[in-house]
Length: 205
Picture 1: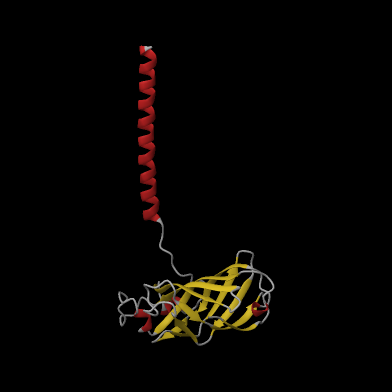
Picture 2: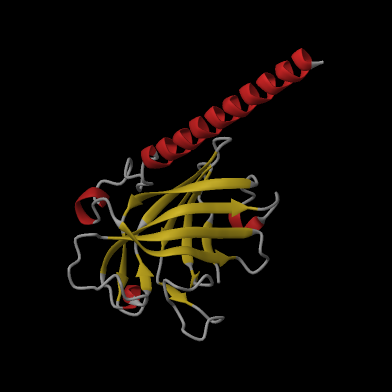
């Protein structure tokens, strides 16, 4: 009986030590993986003037939303601004409204379901937005110019140009602000190509 108790005690001690070592190892792995994750950077691969005008870029607004009237086409993106601008205090949550200069979009265009004539029957799915030329924003949040491609995992491709478009916030009493989660943009777009064919204008809100 004494030997059995002693054996159980030793086994319990070994389990406790092994558990502590495992927990310590997991914590070390968590810390190292967190510290080595690279920061997300804009993709300038097909944008000839983005590196020169925007550089690495910083987010002027995060999580800007937009959608068509039927809610079948959704946009969610960060507005990337030039880090070279010394004229704006980016600690001010309304800094984007005072900024004038080059910007880009980084995010997702989502087509919810098939058969939407507004996007010329583009296949449903998430399309990664990548710039082909930078846009411009003027004081007050008016966005214009810029050409973008949106590519889905199945290879579908939408190319669109930005016309005069307005950033706004009708839900937050403070209006457009980096502290708000409800910033939106009323897009005026031209869909130059949906899988190789010209499509036409697209308005969102």
